[in-house]
Image (cartoon, rainbow, N blue to C red; front, side, top):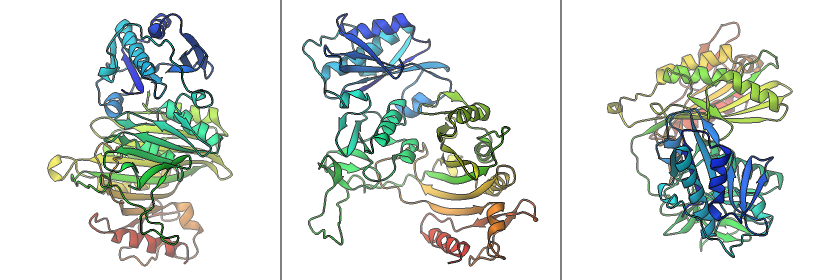
Length: 476
C-alpha cells in the first residue's frame, strides 16, 4: 500500500472537512502541528505522528496531475492535498487513505491512488506505535542514520514535492546525504535529478533481480554501514573498484524519442527594475511558439507563468538563493529548473531546460534546430548571457528520467556571451580549431559567438569537438 495519498478537489477543503478527515482514526487520536501550522499530524498516544497532512495547494497549471500521478484532476484551478503515512505502519497507511477519501467525498473530487481510498469508516489503531524521534520529526524522512536520510517514495514519478524539498533541506542542514528509494517502474523528475547532487545522495530503485540499484548509474547497491552503497565485484581491486551494473538498467529500448536540452547562465546587473525569468521565457517562445505554462518552488507547479511574480519571490528571499521549477503544457512537454543567486557580479540565473519530442519525422514534432541561433541571439543581446550549451539526447518525450541507461547527450552548439568574448585575448574566441567557424550574434562592435558542433547522436564526436573548443578558449 502506498505511503503517499493525495486528494484532488474542485473546492478548497474547509476546516470542517479537514477535521472530518482527521477523525478517520477516531476521536481519541491526538492532533499536532508542525511548520507553523503548515503540516497537521495525526499522532499516537505518545504524540508521535501516524499521518502528516500538508496544507492544500491551489494548482492553476493544467497537466500537473497527469504528469506526476498519471491521473485526471478537476479543471484548473483545483486543490491538491497530500497526506503521508508513517512508513511500516499498515494502520497509518489506511488512515491516510481514509483521510483522502473523506476529504474528496465531502468537498467533491477524487483521491490518488484510487485503491487507497477504499473506505470512509474509522480505522482502528489501538496499540499502534511509531518510530521515536528523530526519524518521526521530519514527515518525509523514513530512515535516519549518521550518514544519510532515507526517503521512500511509492509514486509513479519521484517529484520535488514540498515534502521532499523539506527532506533535502533537513539533510543538508544536518550534513547528511539524501537517498530516495522508489519501486521498479517509477521515473524521476528532472527537478529532483537537478537537486540530488553527488555521493552519498542517490536515487535507489527496488529490483526483483538485483535487489536495489542506482537509478542514474545502474550500480547494484546493498544496505551497508548505515546507507545504500555499491556492491564490489568479485574481481574488484583497490585500484579498480568495479561495481556490477543491474541487468534492468542495461535494458535499452530506443523508441526514437528525443530531448533538446539547454543549459545556460546569465548574470544581470543588480537593479531594482530587474525582472527575472525573461531569458527563459524568450528561449521557450523561440523554440515552442508559446511561453511556459507554470512555475513553483516545488512540484506540482501551482502558479501560472509570471516573470514578475517569480522576481518578487526571489527578491523576498534575497540574499538567500532561490530555486524554481518551470513546466510546459501537455502539447509540448518541457521542464526547467532555475537557480537564482546574488553574487558580487550581480544577480545570476542558471537554467537547465529540456523539451521532449516524438519519434521520427512522421510524429509531426520536428526538432526546432533552425530556431537555436535566434534564441541564442535574443539571450545574448537582451538577457546578459554568459554561456549556453545545447545538446540532443535519446530520451523520453515526457522528459521524465527512467531508471535505465539513456546515454549522454550530443552537443549541438555552444554560445559564448559578448562579455566573455571581449575578455578573451586577441582573436582567440573567433579563430578556433573547429571545422565550422563561429557565427556572430548581435552587434559587431560587441558580438556574442555561436559555435555549431556535430550533433549526430550515433557517435560522440560532438563531445570531442566540444572539448577541443573548451581547451582552445581556455588557452590550453
